[in-house]
Image (cartoon, rainbow, N blue to C red; front, side):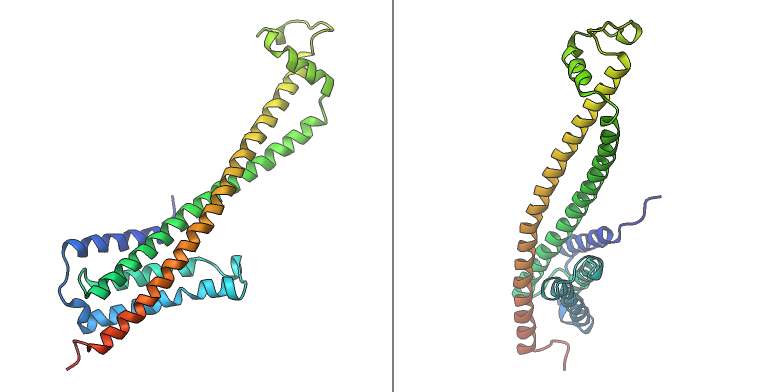
Amino acid sequence: MKSVNYPELLALVFAGLVFVFIAFPLDRFSGTVTGHFLGIAGTLLITATLIFPFRKRIRGMKGKANPLQPHVYLGLIGAILVTLHAGGRSSTIGMLLYFSLFIVVISGVVGRILLSRVNRSLRDQKKDVEVLRSGFGQLKGQIDPEVCYKALLLERDMPDSLHEEAHSPDQPNPAHYKQCAEFRLLAEAIASREAVIEVYDRTKFLFRFWNTIHIALTCVLFAMVIVHVYTTIYYGLRWLP
């Protein structure tokens, strides 16, 4: 049974809430006690996502020492709470802030999903290449290069019934020919998978650019959070007497 992918599930919940509140907005809910509580809680969770880039870029912690999963969960749960806080309608600055949040979350989710699939495919391809190279190395020690060269030259002219016919001195032994054909197929398979690996490596380079965009959008988001909090305090909290 396939396990539940919770990040993708949370992303669907987030996207679903966005469309629900666009269709059925809650007037002035964001200014209520509950609305403010959800907004503050969501903002704190989103702020906590900065722990991951801080550990990665400032402290140099990577891999298992700095897992990505908490960053993803904090961001998605925080975005869901902020969506509930906004209720589909807020001030102009609030809506601009929420739009920035939406773009940041989508860029992060899409980048994570695609990158994880690329990494998974890349690992599978590399495992396949290791297995093929192992068989290639073993078979290489069993064949005669001169016989294989001759076999491959004669391949187009050989009849399908070669393995049933006696061979002449001018033709390779059917058993040798089979080994040579297998050797060639292994070499072609290795070359094909190495080409795919090269494409995946280039794709990962593109994700570095995608990640730069995600970071830039995050900086814009937090700048707008500061403005939103300031204007909310400056113009007064509507739920206070």
